[in-house]
Length: 238
Image (cartoon, rainbow, N blue to C red):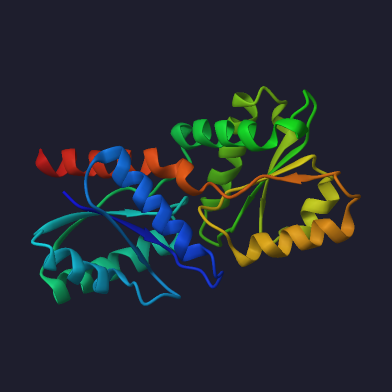
């Protein structure tokens, strides 16, 4: 069954290319067609992509939201986009769970951090897990729990890994700078203007080389996209 990766969308000029790469990596892992669509900032809407999938001869597809928290986009925007796409294209869409903030993501984050931030990962390293942030109750707390899990997997003291949102209260580059981290781990799938803003801020406010920022997750997330799709398909089959 085809899979559609559904991202939030971004104004960043490199974001769409990155989501396309995630789709390609997922297709290579699963051996099935994988498409990509965006909720906003792109003509590749779920409705437009559903028409393309239907034109290929498929009657069903699984939608995997590239979202970490169960917040507004997951609860409202995604179901609305699916309803619109089904009505317009005739394609039956199965909604999978989002990527979430569970242990499987913590495993991938830890591996990604070790791969890209090895030089900054001393036994007493201070790490910031930097996310978009949400006003939905419980969303930011789930990211903080992810930070605690990441600390365990990196063998760091729990107090040394702090979740900081880019938006909302007690947020943004200023808070990151106050924490004086050795390493910033972005909880982002793709390049983002929020990450560019953080990088520029840290470059101007912290000594050169004092803080390393690892890249966005990119194709490292492909195994979880495939896992969410397969689980949704199994549930539907039952």
